[in-house]
Image (cartoon, rainbow, N blue to C red; front, side):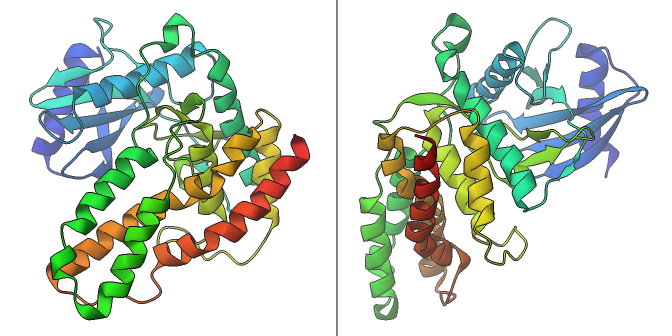
Length: 329
């Protein structure tokens, strides 16, 4: 890693966080953000996230993330803790970057096994159980969650309809299927709001040395329907994708997630009615955007894509999950 890549953040930590002489190890470096583990000698490590000023993630995005983490800290919820600058600022602008610093949660990636998934389900249920707290003043500044069906479906529809005139005859059937499916997904906007993680899956959680499962990576968290989190966790732990290991059939994974979740929180029948939509909308949005890119670039669409298999698996998976949830009502 080049010195000029980390120097702005090293000087920031020294000047505004009173933490000189630290080392930064890259965790993720993209055009949209920089993420580093900050080694602090004898102190516990931090995580520094930086977003370019004027980029896709504006200052409101960083402030929203900070507000959620601050709220979780106030409630004693297990999550990374916000580290404020010396002047108390939650987000610091420095040399063209918006920076947020948090603690680093030590631990190992959790296994796609019922025991671990049950603990993750319980952590998610505990988060959603904070719903009665967010009506108080500390929760008033919390943002709307980022990836919700209404905006995501609207974006996907824009992407796919923009290439309608370019769709070759051989792909017209797939285009019509995707378009119809997008129009058929319920936006879940009529459901109660709680604080949701918004990207809860095994890869965004760690098991600490004492055995606790802690969700990490709270970008995009905020107010949203609880079933959005639940649906994504269920589909992520039961169906494979390019970033998960092969998943042989095991109905105990779903049972474990539901049992863990229901130890802390229950979904109402109206929420369970929307479970299939909560499970399918993200794979559908991914597929629609991927299809649009295929058409624009004149490429041949891959057969049997992961997102389509995941989309098709939703009805059966949602029915199994609902039968488990109803045992606790």
